Image 1 (cartoon, helix red, strand yellow):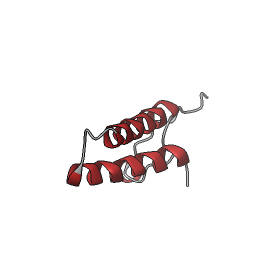
Image 2 (cartoon, one colour; image 1 turned 90 degrees about the vertical axis):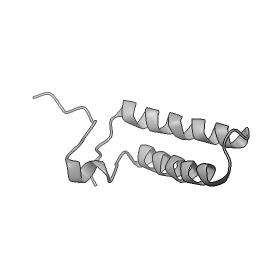
Image 3 (cartoon, helix red, strand yellow; image 1 turned 180 degrees about the vertical axis):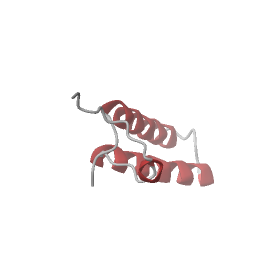
Image 4 (cartoon, one colour; image 1 turned 180 degrees about the horizontal axis):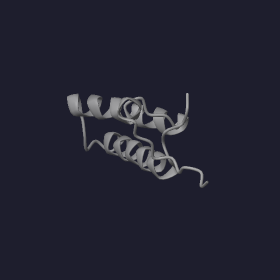
Amino acid sequence: MEKNMGTIDRVIRASIAVLIAILYFTGKISGTVAVILGIVAVAFLLTSFIGWCPIYKPFGISTCKRPRS
């Protein structure tokens, strides 16, 4: 599995996941919205840790820096 996420992309995803967690634990979101955003947060954390996004693959997207030749 080749990485297709750059550092900035990974940091943004992890930050969004942390923000969602903060909103949940402070009671700003609840119910169905909290469940959906919780699933999104977990997906963002997983993809940011492994550096690979399955949605990027079919579209040929990569935010990794390419080595200079």
